[in-house]
Image 1: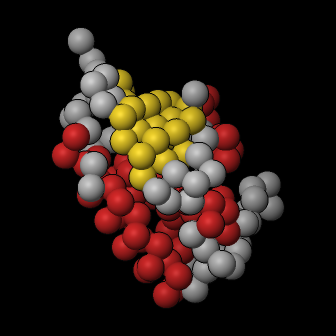
Image 2 (image 1 turned 60 degrees about the vertical axis):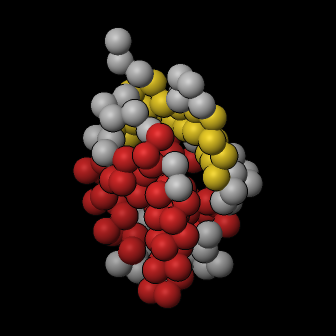
Length: 133
């Protein structure tokens, strides 16, 4: 039976729930960036912070689990309600290149923080995709 991991990105923390445990990462991903177009230093600091947070729980995340995410800010990036790691990576490469988001998407630092967290989570925990709840 496939296990499920639930990830909820909340205002002041990220809550991860597995079938046996619950973890809370004390980070406000929406406030990672002071500017809507973060500079290189802001990106690096945010990446280090997120990687450190993820590494503290990564070993408790079951491999090959289904990932279900609660985060409405990521919905514009999820065709049919699914976030794909490759797609988020392309969006990240675009935004980390100090370019504004396309006109149909928010250009806020808040959304970029959410994108960064999900990119790092999918990459470091080995998920190819996540379903939005």
